[in-house]
Each structure stands twice: as structure tokens, then as C-alpha cells.
Image 1 (cartoon, rainbow, N blue to C red):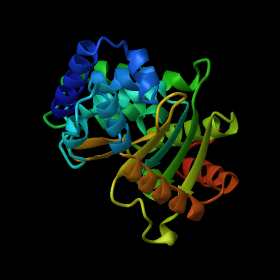
Image 2: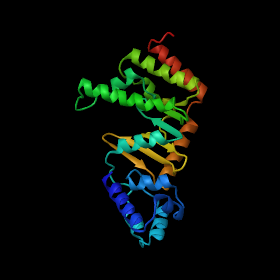
Image 3: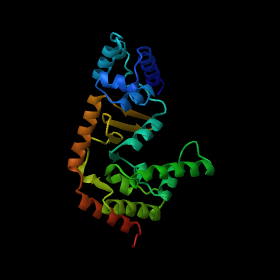
Image 4: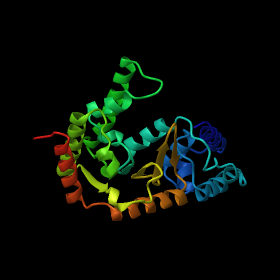
Length: 266
């Protein structure tokens, strides 16, 4: 996130020149200290209104407002930024278009996904990536675990990743998560046709002391969105798609039936 990091470095320099701590700046600009810290570290960008208040407090004219990173700018190290936010979230809404979201994957499903990377990863690298992905899933069991909703396109259920046995195990893992009330799962059936989330995968995240963000990802690119207007639009898309998805009970029944079709007999 080179552009955002430069912006954050400049904000930090101006804050220190003014002799303010992060908490003092946050209080004066009506923000939270953690939000200031994330901006300075290059993990977040302020909204236009936040930038205006920062300019006012720091007496920087309209510099912070004028040089906000463009919303369509490429984001370097996008996954690392999204991963950090995921660990801090109190609520996560996931949408998956073609495969199971990372925090919900079983070990064998994760290995099947990661083994198909290009250029091909070595066995050692694949092992490392699988461990990292499974570590992410531990947030579901941690104290104060986030509320997680997963909306899955039916293609996620039908695309055979790693073989029928792996798919059966993966789908039953989702059933168990839903029945243990750790995750709400909803399926968008093929019969629905086009829906507002068909362009890419999407994660929506909420926090205790920071504004919500969204994260979208495509082939070799991803973007953390923290512009309030963009986040609100993506939240609206998610809500519209969710309103057309199968209810929880019917979605779990479909997951169970599909797992049985793949050969699960438990």
C-alpha cells in the first residue's frame, strides 16, 4: 500500500510537528486513536470528512483532503491489509462466488485450492500456506469471536475442488459450523439468475472502534475499501443478494444433501 503508507507517514510527521499524541489528535478530530494509528501505518485511509477535520486540527490547509489516495488506485500487499482487518473485526459478512472463503476451509480443501497456484508452489510452500490459512480459521473459536455470515453462490457447492470426498468433508464442515451457530450460511441458488454480487468475491467487516470496511478480490488483485460511500454501496449489494438467498435452514439442508451426493454417509 505504498501510496497510503506515504500519506500515513506524512500525517504522522505533521502530528509530531504539532506536538500531539495519537490520542490527542484523535480527540481533537473526533476520531478514535486506533483509526489514527491505522492511517499512519498505511492500513487505512481517512474519509473526506475525517481528512477535512485532520487538516483543521493540524493547520495544514486542505493538504490532507487534497492528497487522499485515489479510490481506484492499485493496492499493494492487499491481502496482508485485509488479513489484519479480519483479525480485528467483530462482524464479518463473506460472499463467495466460486470457492469456499478461506476462514471456512478444511485442511484438505485448502490444500487443493493452494496446490493449483501458478507458478506452482513447492510442497514446503504449500504446507506453509495451508498452515497460514488454518490459522485464520482460529478466529471462529477465539474468545470474542466475530459474528460471521457466509453467503455462497451455488457454484461453490457444485465446483468439485480436490475430489468428491474432499467436497463432502468441506460441505459438512459448513453444516457443522452452521448447526453450532458459529456461522450463518446462505446459498444463492442458480435458479436466481443474475444477482448483484456476481462480479467478484466480497468481505464486509465491522469493528468496535473503527468505521466499517469492505474488501473485494479478483485475479491477481484486491482492494480494501474504506470510503464510506463505497462501503455503503457494497453493503447494499450484499443485503440485496442476501434477501434473495435461501434461508438458513434450507441452505443447510442443501449443503447436507449435496455432501451426500458427493458420498458423505455420516
